[in-house]
Length: 345
Ligand SMILES: Nc1nc2c(ncn2[C@@H]2O[C@H](COP(=O)(O)OP(=O)(O)OP(=O)(O)O)[C@@H](O)[C@H]2O)c(=O)[nH]1
Ligand SMILES: [Mg+2]
Image 1 (cartoon, rainbow, N blue to C red):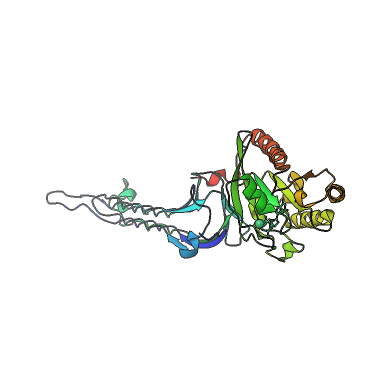
Image 2 (cartoon, helix red, strand yellow; image 1 turned 180 degrees about the vertical axis):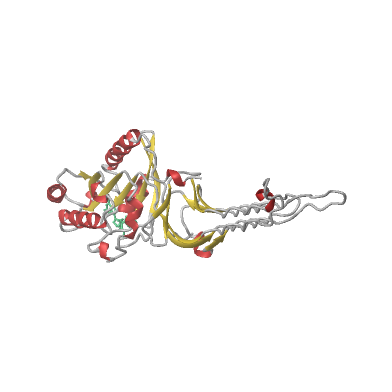
């Protein structure tokens, strides 16, 4: 299945049904009085985060979603039927923006979480409603209120606990494949990975989700290479794993390149906790390991772990470090009321 993480969708909620003007007319009953019913409410357009979806590909094929209009009120005090809602099923982690792509309407981070995106119009009152002591035969009824229409943008930001960043060929996908059941494509040319991949990692009886994203290169924030658009998928991670290929010339320079891109992207990525690892140790002699570690340490201002995604050396240490940060974040997160709470249906 193709991966798609952005979609533009046009939605319209239902109009309310009109109120009805009607009078009771029966043989032998004088002054039967008004009996026009109210119109029904128009349907809402609602988004819901569901399990089992991990792309927005469905929205490539259908981009228009209309809820049903409410039915008109009728005589004999009959209320119009309410219009049916329409439900947009989206993967967990989907953010919904206004057309400008900046104003956030809803952030659906939990399974089952819902947001009403467009409210159906209320039905109009029928003439029975306007009956009073001074006007016992009102001839007016309200029209239904119109629904809302708007264009929205859906943006999927995968929910992973940890994300791997690094230059192309650093061994990110190899690492993911080594520690999880994920089967990303691995090859010795840059930009093997074209789409983010997720894997579930088990360590010390605990689990977390690790994301592998396409490699970054200098200028990614200006669109060079695959650009930095996939960085959105590590925005929600609690910790980054920064992999540096030990076989390249200068591990320190590679590190700085990626850090510069993270800083240029913004959104808090540069401030995230980071575990730094020098990869491909199996292919290096001990002098080179020492040199590269020293360069990397100078650049990162902390001692990197030395690992090999191929031989497995040091990999468990990396996972434990990641897990420590993740667990700490999990326990300290006393679930502050989410900013989008008012949008939940
Ligand atoms: N010797 C050795 N080779 C490795 C190691 N890890 C990865 N490689 C090799 O490095 C090459 C690139 O690995 P990938 O895992 O595809 O790298 P990537 O970072 O995912 O690259 P992109 O998806 O292009 O960004 C492959 O040929 C791997 O076999 C390692 O620990 N030791
Ligand atoms: Mg890859």
